[in-house]
Image (cartoon, rainbow over the protein chains, first blue to last red):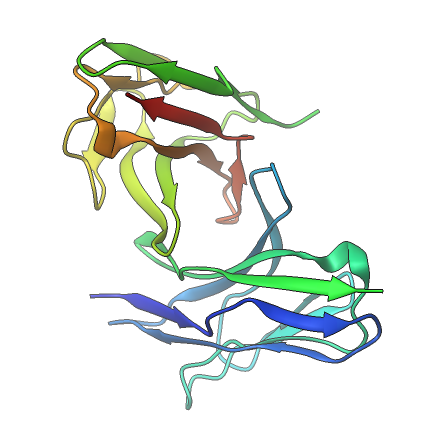
Length: 109
Length: 111
């Protein structure tokens, strides 16, 4: 079946540091890939998505590139802010949506 | 404003007492779903609905029921709640571009 594997957290960074959260997937076909963000006490919000190989999704300074050869969709940001502290979920869509377990990001001033 | 609403946001109940969590969306989406979120397990899909009167089981449907009598509403029913259903529940609706819109969540405690 389909599955998503994310790096375990928490990821702890200082403000302005570079962020990478790894995500790899297993799917029987060619899924669409997503990153969702969950701020404390809230539901999930779509951060970015990519629908085919080599697509790059980007939003709010975050980027992720759909790599079919490595079945990966790593999330990156060049300079994190305290307000980026949240839980990040990688997900794939192939008939149904499958989520990873989430990675907590903590950014300190 | 486009949104998914859930009620109640917080609920404490006792084992065996039937409850319903309501979910409503104002975006005219056909596809809606329910998830539960548990520490270390991420989000797991309970049930989904592709349209009115069409519902199907997700990954963890045991102990839950749903109905879809109208497009905007997708209530989650626990006929006889048990402590292992203590969790954070999210309703979501999906757009034509496959973006999911989540409700704010319902934190349920079953004693």
